[in-house]
Image 1 (cartoon, helix red, strand yellow):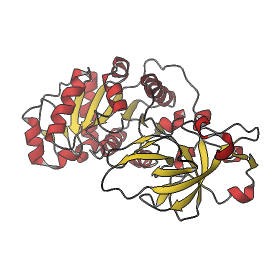
Image 2 (tube, one colour):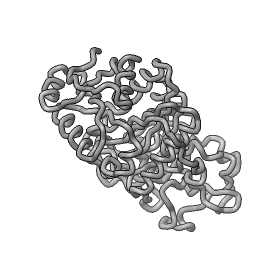
Image 3 (tube, helix red, strand yellow):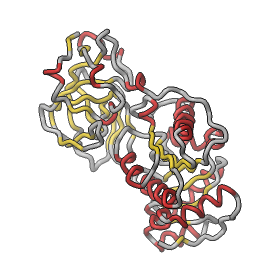
Image 4 (tube, helix red, strand yellow):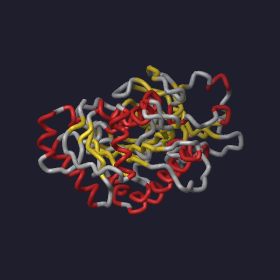
Length: 361
């Protein structure tokens, strides 16, 4: 164990996933070779040196700014697992004292599979775990928001599911947030699952959300591999905290696609279904729209409409409309106060959404 003095810590780039960790708490460094790799847990904060730049040439800082990475840079980030079909799958482990940077938000582990278009992952040498002055290792779970009582009655919750990565979930969520804010709502925005990153939070903030939280605020750098009970606790916790902060409506994004393990578990969970009042489904094409809407409905969800990449194509929408009795919302429609208000009338039950046409862009 060695002291982590100001001189050897001042140039460390602290990743977004460590954003709730108090920097001054890091007083010691627990070496990997003596502390034991097997004792490490997902969410442990490690100090690493960049050995070779690969796919990720930058890192998102605690401030939300992207910083370029150079060979020899030292960074503080989290050990964690990741599942991203368009990028990397990794386990929360080290290979000796080496690891891969698998997410710009600050996750490292060992890559097990990757998409064919990805470069070799950026290689890190882990110097040790950051620790308190007492020698206790620092884990992001130690800085989570405390549990709070359930607010009753709670504000309406609209969940945004999607067909896959890059189907348009964040764009749909941010667009809806903007439309609701324009309609004079105090919007609470959150992301319940995924890999810690500042992009979604920044999108919600730019859209006009009054309050923003995500799973990193509840002590998780990543939700890949967590239990259904933990997913429930994260979802409920985010809703409760946003309600206590004054949100009168909540938009909750769920990462990845409905076939991904954690997303599928939440979608099918009766407790999560009760927590949400309606769902927007972001689809990439007509087939994914049809299958996704049917899967959500079979799980008991009220599908309020389809959005996402699909709605950029009138032809693809026509294909999906032939098989679905639901509305299709373009990005521009969701950003309008009128489009957002139409969604809320579905929650209240005052208006039945029967028209299958796209709300005009």
